[in-house]
Every structure is written in C-alpha cells, then in structure tokens.
Length: 286
Image (cartoon, rainbow, N blue to C red; front, side, top):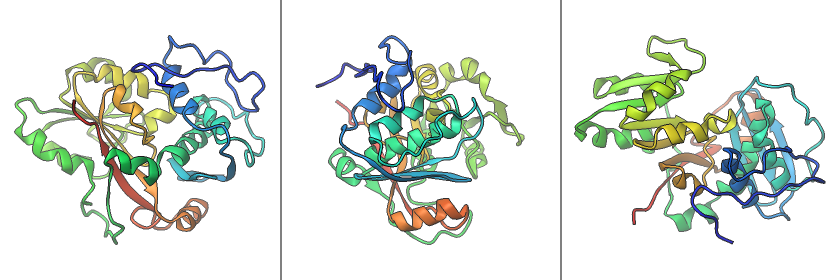
C-alpha cells in the first residue's frame, strides 16, 4: 500500500509490548516516525541488542543496525528484555523522549533499512573499507562531495547541524554556521537558532542524531529551501526521507557484524571502515 508524500501508515498497537499512545495521528510530526516503523514487516524478530557507551546496535533476523548513543531526556521506562520481540515494536522506541530508548529505536530502524538488498536497487554507493589515519578525508565524505557545488554556487550559506570532525574546513569556501546543542567550540551556535537561520540557508548538513532527539521533522521543514544532506550512522537509510526534503542520505551499513558488536560493547576500537561501511543514497530527479 502506497502512502502520499509525507504521510504515514499509522496504527494504534494497544496490545503491543512497546507502544506510545497519542502518537498515531496523521496530522502531527509523529507521521515521520510512524511511516518508517510501519514499513517494517511484522514477522522479523530482534535477536540481540546493546546500548553502548558511544554507539549502539540492534541485531534482527534481517541484519544489524547501529546508532549513535544519545543520552538524556526523560527517564527510561522500557527496561524489559527486547530479544524475541518484533523488530517493528522495538523500532517504536524511536518515538521515546528517553534518548537512550530512542537510540535503540533508531538502531532498530536501521537494522531493517540499512541493508544492501534494499539500498542497491535504489542506486546506493559504498565506500570500500580502508585503514584511515586520523584526519584524512574519506572518499565518501559528504562534505567533500558537496564542496564543488558549494564553491560554484552564487550564494554559499552553509549550516551544519552537529559539530562534526574537521567541520571548520568549510569556513575556507563558505559562510559557515554550526548548530550544536552543547556549544564547546568558537564556531558553535546554540541549536534554537535553527528557527532564525535555516530558512535562509543554501546547504544544510544534518546529523542523524536529529532523528533520535525528534528535531528532524521540524529541521527538515525549516530547511525546505536548501539542499539538505543527512549525515552519519544514525541516518535512517530510507528513501522516505527524500519526501521530507533530503537530497542525500550519507549513512552506513554494517560490513562486519562481529566487529561492530565488539566495537559497541568495548566502547573503543576502529568502527568505520572495518565494522561499518559508509553508504550514500541520492534522491532521483524526475
């Protein structure tokens, strides 16, 4: 069953183990999450998961998905064992205002969406696993991929949501603003400035963490006049995000589940290029 642009396939799972009453109305931003969740088949089960120090994963019958571990928000209430539950129910946690729970929900979404069998038919590309000394630019670096377009643009107003490593490079060729919840660098501007800045931006790079903390629907609406790129392993690799205005999804797929599992549980070690393979998917033009 198809869905109109930016609409959702909402239901009200009154008897589900994980549910969030009051979030199933079509006319609210929850439709962003409901559509993603309801596209997951009902018969896929969760086999393992870990809420790690820096990263988290959910492993299901269909594969493994990861997410940045976002902390804070409301008190955690869903502390039951999630193993054996339908992946669709665990993905409901993406709607939790406890950001640790929402982390697992987004990892569950990526367990379904961040898979080659879904991404390959969409024309996704992948970065081959390579050793990366600190500070080098990967082939799939979304910021570098867009640099020629930004440099050639008449207007070069660029906002990056989330303080990514080496984001200061953009200052050399554009008017850069970095929106950050916890400002620690000279470049950082508090993220409530989004209401004032984003409507006038030409390019917006948005961390996938915005899906966890629930700001993504509003930020995408505010940035509708800009070229929008969603960046990072927490990006849900679903083409539905194109309906909300994203032009590119620069996320990842799990290349080696065993390495990913170890990196998450160990809280250290190489994650990108070994456990994860960077992937990008670009909206097709009509």
